[in-house]
Length: 268
Length: 268
DNA sequence: ATCTGATTCCGTACAGCGTAAGGAATTGCG
DNA sequence: CGCAATTCCTTACGCTGTACGGAATCAGAT
Image 1 (tube, rainbow over the protein chains, first blue to last red):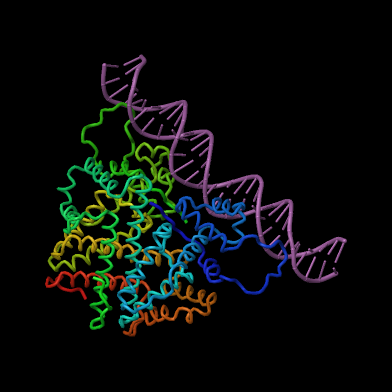
Image 2 (cartoon, rainbow over the protein chains, first blue to last red):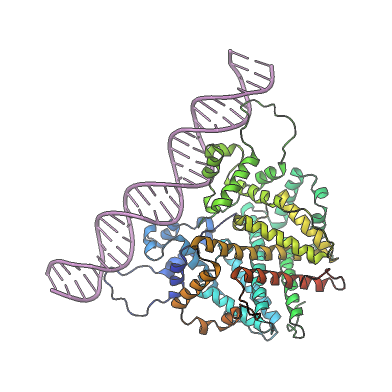
């Protein structure tokens, strides 16, 4: 259970996020030239988080990676909270800014979701950054813009599309979280998905032998997970399928709302 | 920005979660009788988190509330991570274990979502507990059981319902998060939603004057938020509406999948 | 060439955190 | 009465983010 809460000063973060290249003029100020830059600090911080997770992200760790003292970072960044804001936005720069709609909006929406999901799995710490308060950096905004472009093709009113956009974000984040957890568990224990889950189930069976009687519907819900098509899919594949199905349900709803306009070649 | 990472020992957490009343036998062990109990510790911790947020949740703070030293807690709970696991599950005890389906499964599902959402708003720190790794305590399981009961009324296959359940959880959590953020911002700045948002927009306008040209679709997406029906709804009301609409889209998809079986009196 | 003032960077320090280690106090059982 | 187990506390360690003050570096005015 990992938490990043409280976040930083919104004004300072916004200035840093959108300042980017900073005033183009050459620097003519006295004093030693900065050996680092905001971008360098953020990049180093992202590396630290990618490698060691959010728990390993400390100012000292980032500074060590840059060969500086931890206090040196504070000339570039107001504090750790704002640094996380910057990291969060920067990571979203890896995503495309638009999606072709040759195969219809539904395919484009699915691609958008897949890309975002992949980003979360590349940088799992993103999922531990509270998106409660919208940081609203340029890169994250670009992702939103791409989604907006896809959704407007439905012809639906903006109010519906706002709801759809929020729902899509939620589904992708939630799904990626589950998947990231499985990876983490696998890495931590050295045991593969299926075995880990079996071990977990066994432990639960020890500690709560009356599980099946207390929660019959839950058991029924998770029963038959192997699917009817013989081959028992791997745990990761099943998670992938569940995620895709949830997404499909939402897109079905959206397509129904769009009425006559089809979403293009339906992927199912 | 506080972080709770790494989570606790799953085995220890599971034992504590499902032990509950513990072996019913009278205690006949030597040594001083425990003045506290696991339940008392968890209850105190929940109080601390409710009042001061997740940042205020420290072992010392919990111990102070109980009039003990921080180290005394470790005789009841293996560590902070496991304590958070227990808190998380205990909070879910506030939710009902089943939902009547007199008005059809759709109304029941909506009620389930509303209750869960209300729980998250009562205990916002729940949203900062990473549900990446399923803690799988009895109370959380009860919530899942309630949802399963609702969903099976659709007559759909378990695989579809698993996806629907996951999606519903994601939507409720995501929506509650946005709402909780607005409250937090309002409380922190003393400014009401609408004004805070206006201030934020103004600040963004200063720092990124070319916003409208760079992100025209996003602007169009959030434009006309006041709705066509004259009265400009409050920010919180709009969030509520957006959340409800997202939920409705998903339920539409589910209803479509259920084919002939209607979800009962459609709430919209 | 020198001074001035701004800027970068670092060393130290502090309060807070989770918790390991060990000792004091309390109790039921022999 | 020991004995052994259990609860609870004190102390301490290493870690965190960061406030503070000083040292080093440099541009431009003198």
